[in-house]
Image (cartoon, rainbow, N blue to C red):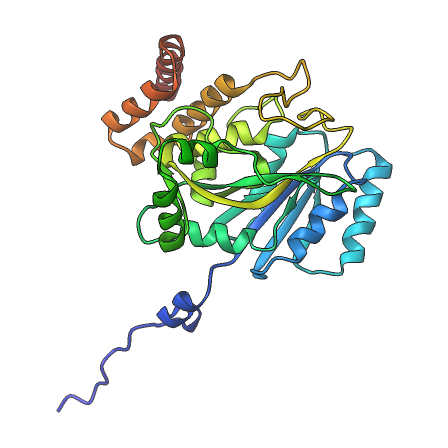
Length: 332
């Protein structure tokens, strides 16, 4: 008679279906800080006051001057919140490189970003996670609309993108509102959709795997992290747009990415002389994608469709040459 007991399958209570269904997952927030200690407190408080409390916030100080770094340390100490952690870059990396340095310290599947002069609405993390966990479409990045506020003052607007205006103009407002109500996002843009689809860094939440796929393998010299991360992740995973104001862009005198005055949808928002890095950011993200073996995750025809949608003939030629040179080096 066989008295052996049947083998029991291992079931971890931490990952049981009940727990998975009952809560939104933990997420990470990355803030790259460089000499912004005079405006950072509001941003940090907006993270601490999130309705979704299961997060970690990694602040990377990108080699600020001693007075700014010391002030940042004191502010974080005053928060007395173990969910916040400070790491210090040994040299100035630039915003994009600093974010990927902090990414190595993250422990979550979903990663949001916040500039030190911006702020989240209390529902930001929960709403963006809900969008990512919809029942219709998986995407690499989710983004929301943003408002504007004057740092140290009041709100200036509840609109940043053209999404609401275009939605109404094209007769899609009801459809987008229904999608938002039923599924947590208003519209999905597939990877081959070109153009700028996002607001700014503080409107973004990524799947970590998408960011790892475009982790730079060579220095990125410009500082616009949204240009690199949003475009790079979108090219290979698509974007979900949430038509809610869930974060706010801070306007102040030392922010060169926006003019000091804000009053019209038709004005020039950026100060003169700000370099448009969109094309170079795409090229750098594609280079990282191939260097990180991202092409092994896609059928060749799908990659070709994506690249043709986003890059001109000259850029495509440069990419082919780079891939050929890299293959030659690997063979030797």
